[in-house]
Amino acid sequence: MNHFLSRSWVLSLVLLSPLAWADQGLAKSKNCMTCHMMDKKVLGPAFKDVATKYKGDKTAADRLATKIMKGGSGAWGTAYMPANSQVSEAEAKKLAAWVLSLN
Image (cartoon, rainbow, N blue to C red):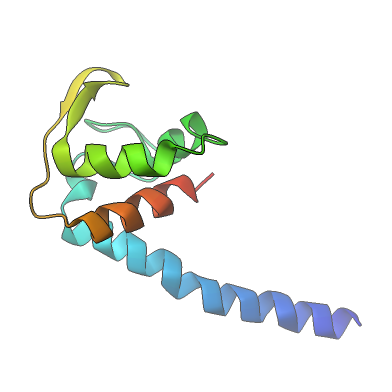
């Protein structure tokens, strides 16, 4: 039984890792990492802090996707997040879901 559980756990990591990396890769390719890091504040909040702030908020994914595309300010102090016209709606939703999954 323990052998089965160990194999299942390893298989889960192998299958899920490419999904996490694909989204981090998207964040890098869209220049999100210029202002954000995984676990520390740069110009914008850490992705993990965003996930914590919006944990349990059913409307967060849509609101974050909109903010990724159109920009905004006020949620994290006076810093302004510029609009990202190079990010499609589908990409913004994928990025928002990924960020929220980090909690």
